[in-house]
Image (cartoon, rainbow, N blue to C red):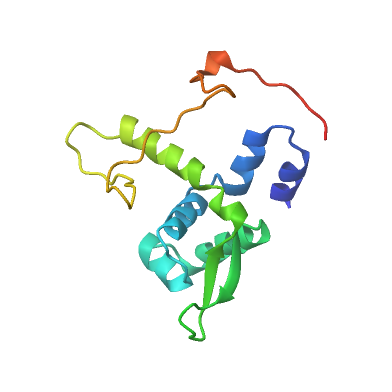
Length: 149
């Protein structure tokens, strides 16, 4: 109930986004979905998460329209959690978190994963914030404005 109140009343898009998907396990579930994990058991195996916590997080993600539950792609009796368009739109957020972590949370030479372009097998270019005319923007180059509608 508190989640819904915050999602419906906060004027800050960052606050609403964090309330919706900012919890650690939620983002890791979404990350795994980008790696083609779709079944409850596979999420559980990948994350080592208790069934009740995973079930609760997946339920919220379905309610938010991040996932939809579909029949298994292999025709079995299982159900799969498939990212919706809204869910796939989280990709740049996950990439941004990944790139920040790669740059700031690993020591030189420390083993970590990197995101590669499947076609070139090269690391994905760092995300940047750009103006309408393509100029790279820093925080001091931006400001917020309250809008209605």
